[in-house]
Structure formats: C-alpha cells, structure tokens
Image (cartoon, rainbow, N blue to C red; front, side):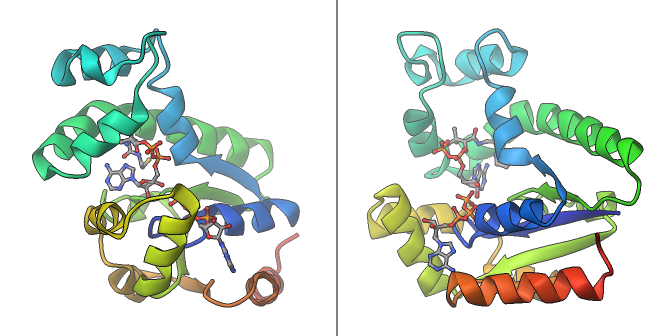
Length: 198
Ligand SMILES: CC(C)(COP(=O)(O)OP(=O)(O)OC[C@H]1O[C@@H](n2cnc3c(N)ncnc32)[C@H](O)[C@@H]1O)[C@@H](O)C(=O)NCCC(=O)NCCS
Ligand SMILES: Nc1ncnc2c1ncn2[C@@H]1O[C@H](COP(=O)(O)OP(=O)(O)OP(=O)(O)O)[C@@H](O)[C@H]1O
C-alpha cells in the first residue's frame, strides 16, 4: 500500500515521516528529489539559469536557493515558471521510487512526502492521503522559528500554498501535530494498529 503524506509548510511532515519510517514504512521524499533534480549537471538547473538568469546560481555553479526562493515566493508567475521546469522531473523520479519500493515488498507501507500534493492534483497516485495539520497561527510561528523568517516572509510562503484547513477537509487521515511530540506519536500508533500494518 502507498500513502501520500502532505500538509502545509512547517506543519510537521518530516517529523511524521520520520516516525512512520521508525515503524517500518519506506519513504519517498519529494523535497529531497526536488533538490536532486537541480544539482549541477541536471537539465532542470540549466533551464532555471536560462529563465531566471545567472544571478540565481552561486559561484560554484549550484543553485542559490535563497535568492530563487525570494523571487518565486513573491510572484505567482515566476513560481509557475519554476514549477513548469522542475515538477515534471520531480514527478518522474517520485513515481520510479514508489514503484521500486512497491515491487520490493508489496505489503510494506510506502509513504510519499509531497508538500504540494493537493496543489498539483496528485491524489490519484495514492491509495490514501494523510494530512499533518496544525492551525495556521502555529504553522506561521513554527515556520518563523525554524527558518528565521520575518512574519511577512513566512506569510508569503503560506500564501503560496492551499489553505491548511482545506487540506484537512480533503484528507483520508489527519494527524493533529499541534500538541506535544508524544501526542503525535500516540496518533501514529493508533493509525498503525488500526490499519494492521507491520
Ligand atoms: C524555491 C526553492 C529553490 C526554495 O528553496 P528552499 O531551500 O528555501 O526551500 P525548500 O526547497 O526546502 O522548500 C521548503 C518548503 O517550501 C514549500 N515550497 C517549495 N516550493 C514551493 C512552491 N513552488 N509552491 C509552494 N510552496 C513551495 C514546500 O512546503 C517545501 O516543503 C525550492 O523550494 C524549489 O526549488 N521549489 C520548486 C520545486 C518544488 O515545487 N518543491 C516543493 C514540492 S516537491
Ligand atoms: N509536535 C511538535 N511540537 C513542537 N514543535 C514541533 C512539533 N512537530 C514539529 N515541530 C517543529 O516544527 C518545525 C516544522 O516541522 P517539520 O520540519 O517536521 O515540518 P515540515 O512539514 O516537514 O516542513 P517543510 O514543509 O518545510 O518541509 C520544526 O522546527 C519542528 O522541530
């Protein structure tokens, strides 16, 4: 069985995916794939430099993520241009990795952490979708704290994504990560048992 894992930025997807892996799940991480497809030598990085200019590269030829983030999170058209370059490559690698895990052990839960699952309409790829939820104010506070962003910059990133309440409504399973880590662990243990996973 596979399961899409999503939520908003900084709601706790990495935290939850780590807990699922500890219980035996296999993990495919779209954020990580997104980094791999823009490594030097990969076609998407070349196309990004052509579209956004050499200023989005660092001296060693790697992507200046901070600079590109400032551009795309303040302008939806620029963001769409970046997604047009990177998303097809991310999706292809993601599907390959999922298929490889499913072939290897069809009974194992394959968790696919995809921040933009709903925004990109990827529900049909998954048997079920789990949303990691925290209320918007807490999401903003954790994002500012973790990434050292101002309230304004953090709000802009939230504004680039579907509202977390809407994601919660669409989910098959919801993990509420607004309490303590122990609280979240309890919810995952129930999920694991109810679904008879091993
Ligand atoms: C713009 C980039 C360079 C900024 O890099 P940075 O290191 O600051 O952020 P990082 O990649 O760790 O992403 C952090 C979070 O931002 C959010 N985010 C990233 N890209 C987007 C996007 N296009 N739209 C909305 N939210 C996004 C996600 O919640 C993600 O988990 C980078 O996010 C990127 O290449 N984005 C395009 C690819 C993509 O869509 N990735 C996310 C889904 S797979
Ligand atoms: N239950 C919790 N209590 C307190 N802090 C938490 C809890 N869960 C996660 N955090 C913190 O909140 C921040 C965001 O969590 P995490 O990095 O797991 O989110 P994410 O959804 O994977 O983020 P991104 O969308 O950027 O990949 C981190 O700094 C993490 O340590």
